[in-house]
Each structure stands twice: as C-alpha cells, then as structure tokens.
Length: 117
Image (tube, rainbow, N blue to C red; front, top):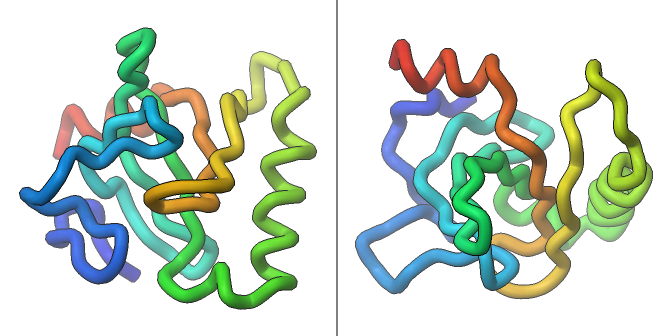
C-alpha cells in the first residue's frame, strides 16, 4: 500500500504538467493514499473553493467491467444519502482525467491527518 507522502507515479499521477482538473471543476492538490479499492486524492472545487476528496479506481482496474460496475453503483447509491454520520457523495465523474471518479466532501479525519503530516 502506498503512503500519502509517497511521490505520485503511473497514469493519472499529479505532475508538473498541464492543469489537472477532474470533471472540469475539481483541481487535484495531491494524493492522500492508495489501497486495493482505490486511490484517494485531495482536491479543491474551482467553482466554490471547497476542499473535496476524490476516489478513483486503482490503475488498470477500470478495464474490469465488474469492478467498474461496482464502483459506479457505489457512487449512484451514495449520491442521495444525507445523514450526519455519512460522508456526503457530491458527484460521479464518468469522463475525462481520472474517470471514473467519486467526489466526496472533505471530512475532519482527513483534515487532521493533513495538518499533522
């Protein structure tokens, strides 16, 4: 498993190249972590300035149609949920850089981890 402070690598990695916008509005700031179920990115909503979290599939996983279907279903089922104990799903991005991607609200645990390094 990659650590949040490991340098990004592979397709979709944040580089010094062109501006990295997901869904035309979420600017990727950096990688928060990676595991078997996906890669998690810190990003900023260019329209409202809010911090968000973006979850993408692991490299190459989108080629597995079953895994892709589960990822998309996860987002679609979570989009309408609103509860104080559930992290809000803001969007499902299906086209463009890093697609498919699930955009989630930034939550306090991630803020605390980022603040302490």
